[in-house]
Image (cartoon, rainbow, N blue to C red):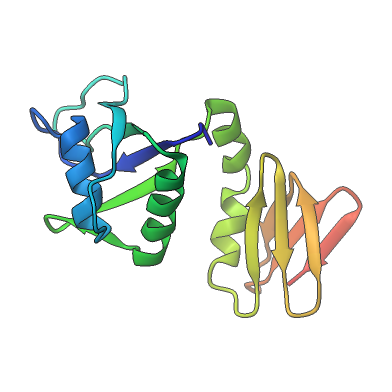
Length: 163
């Protein structure tokens, strides 16, 4: 994560929707915080506007790192977040290379999300930790396949786990 940066998705675009004041008020209201969070800078992503498409992401640099940790913790706890009946999400701002490395685990995360007794997470850049009721496995760059029976198979080098 770029230290103190967050990404906010789903906020409708408007003339002053990404100013530091607007983002600070948005965080206070959506996350039910007691105070306004000091923000050094905020802007929309640099991709071009898409007419009728989804709004561009807001990137905000919070003044205090502890505030960014608290904002991300509250966003996870209170999810799903809503702003004017629109769903929004708040994520850490990763560099493009880290975001690509983490995206390699999207299929595994999608398959594991609804499995009872399974917890998982992404280790900093290229690792994936899988907790089951029997054991814990650290995996590096897995390939995930699903068989017709609904089970999924995690293949990592010589390790193959059936769940």
